[in-house]
Length: 362
Image 1 (tube, rainbow, N blue to C red):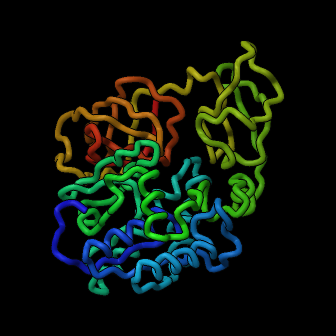
Image 2: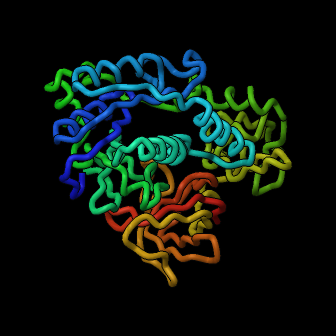
């Protein structure tokens, strides 16, 4: 919890999972005045995931309420369905329609948990919002969790300094195993609840069908980048992502017999271009809307750091510099599967120094 010691009024966002329950319990035990809140994100909860694979379900709201009862804190449910649909679900669909690959969890953190919720919390007189994210904040700066497999600093890299100044991540120094053990000791029934997976607002996990239902079918060509030949057809370019290998249904095999990967998606011509894995390699990235949330000032010259290009993805050494409104990133080693729409989060060791949205790569 950084250097905060004075008692505060804290709003604990409780998803219904083990992490947010233990986070709320720790904040309350530390002597702060804690109120638990669960976010209702669907106007029709039955349309979202249910059971262990869920994230924002009816069962989750009940689990969150039970956890708040055990901890002994007030509990409320806030209806964020309209805002969530507009800022996360509609954004997700429009990004795919534009040939980009969004990260809805990142957008939810940015637009819902640390914009809509934090704004309301501050207006109601709370000092901070606490969540169960696996990341650390020290002196207002975001750092990775020691549990590298569960680290969520990447999806928090879009937060501003102001938002981070009102955020608390009580699990920052704990591993997932330690959190589960503590939940059991505290008598929280979610101690063994499985982690959520996939996208909470896609009920059956079929992203392509979800998009087709909203964007309609639009058959187009799959083109081989090396020969220019049409090697297959697709039902909609939005159903593909950069670096995808499986499910391409190519009608003509490559002349070298090797697998083909999605290299680019062109929504205007509705064309998916495929080619060899070597053609996926990129060393230069252009990213938009940079956010500087660490102690490093925006670079006037080139900045030496590391960059992560997808959640739980590899980290690359890089040089980053501003070019007008954009951020140019020169990788020290080639990356593959870099998809426009994803975040490029800059680090120095475990410290987040900034982020931007990938627009192009070559």
